[in-house]
Length: 257
Image 1 (cartoon, helix red, strand yellow):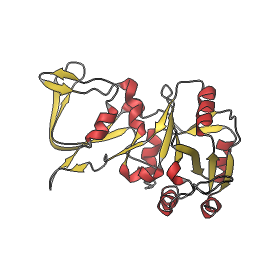
Image 2 (cartoon, one colour; image 1 turned 45 degrees about the horizontal axis):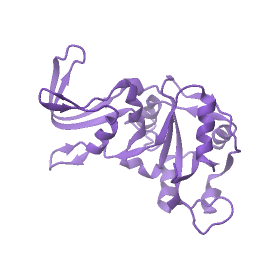
Image 3 (cartoon, rainbow, N blue to C red; image 1 turned 30 degrees about the vertical axis):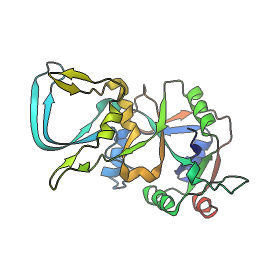
Image 4 (tube, rainbow, N blue to C red; image 1 turned 60 degrees about the horizontal axis):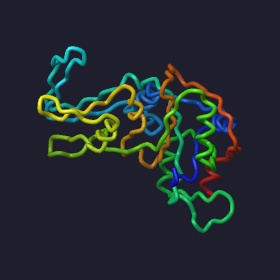
């Protein structure tokens, strides 16, 4: 967190003001799928939420209970969705890092986003006309933890080559192994039948919500995840803030940088 100097929340003014007044509006993976699939807005939506795409020359699928082989898939390009994470509430923020700040600025908000990042925000959030500015990210997170009343996980989103993988040869794609290592980091590997096996357990499935494709890297996302909650639609949670959250017009915010 030491590198994060501010959090920002982009959106329609009424929604951003509601957030600043103490309402944490969370969505789930199913909502993000719908935004991309139905509204065709990639950036605000993402078909890979709570999902992984697997590439391989040969995929073997086993039944978890009786360990029998269910299917063998050659030259696979498979989208796998993690059912335990599909309805988990998620709240998204934009992280402002040291390099996004004007070191020579001495008074007030010293944010200075690049033109590339500003354009990404405009493209990925076309309906946004306001931004909330959180000038003490650590205190904000403590306020959320104190207010929510259920366990939360939070952290910076990690960006990997998920959707298209990495080029292996002219016809094949390969998994981004850094991505796979991130997902399975909580369980030590075991040797089964002479081969190293890695496990991604349900209790750690929230990690799939902290990974996105490199397409989204300029969103610099930070997420709050209510790991023990399940929601079927967007749901609001009340939060008591220790510090006032300022809301400003988005274009004026960009112009004043």
